[in-house]
Amino acid sequence: MAAGEPGDLGGYYFRFLPQKTFQSLSAPEITSRLRQWSMLGRIKAQAFGFDQNFQAYRKDDFVMAFFKDPNVIPNLKLLSDSSGQWITLGFANGRLRKI
Image (tube, rainbow, N blue to C red; front, side, top):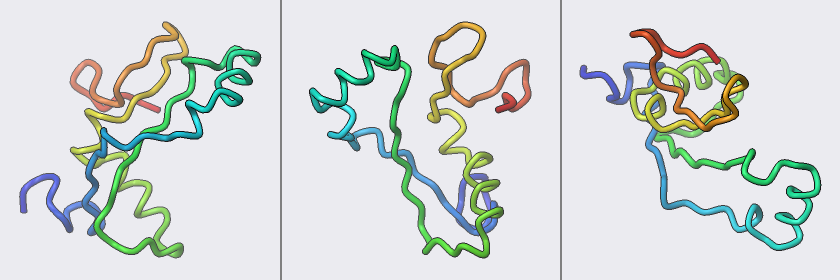
């Protein structure tokens, strides 16, 4: 089975949904409050779909599969503590970047 195929990470297959928008983050009242709290531009929402029903008793498997999935790693954005810039989960120095 190739990396990223269903079953190789606890049976979950994730896909990035870049066209998904979150109206709640762009509503005028919300952007005003985010600006007031110095959070405007420092918060993002991203959507990922997955191919199975979520089962609470397998939550740990789900989370581990999510952060190791080859479709998540290059797309998940994180705000860097050191630079304040958005970076991808990705790899740093040939290793998976620690979260």
